[in-house]
Length: 229
Image 1: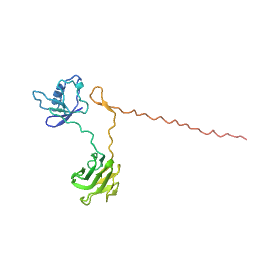
Image 2: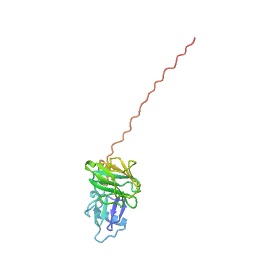
Image 3: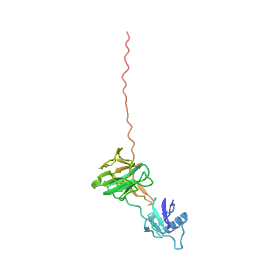
Image 4: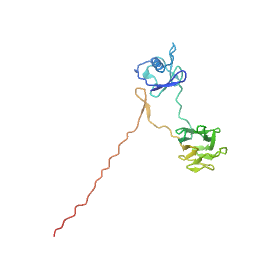
């Protein structure tokens, strides 16, 4: 499965099933036909990210693995690298849940956009609520924003935030209807390597061993003796 970006900037997904000896020029023609892209007489260049692939390169040698982003007649751009930052603020509830903001040292304004999603900006947000200061080693302090409008909810771990206080990892900040959680970044540690056919990436997952069943033995008392008189 590839994501193809054509000359106008539109993108579409396509499942590529081809012989490993197919030249890149033929792959470009097939992708153009699948997406209804105009094909000039000189043909379309195929890009892997920002790299133009030679037309005679064989598919087995091309970096067209599963989930790759390719460009037809234009560079497709490269995938964004892992962002830098000492801490990250995760939107774990409310509008815009799932967003992650990686922050470096400095002062940030926390607020809400007009659609209710959380904003963490160097500038003043649409509806300011709090000021976050990120210090060395990721030490954070959170304080109410003096320019915040009245009536908004601002709580740290379900307690109203009235003054500057430390914001520790794992603690949750309620800004309006958005719930934010502070966390320390973790580097990706998955054991991933290119597959043998070059079309994907193999993930080495340690085997999940089933725990041994507990053998339970019961000892019953001997039956009582019967005495006859």
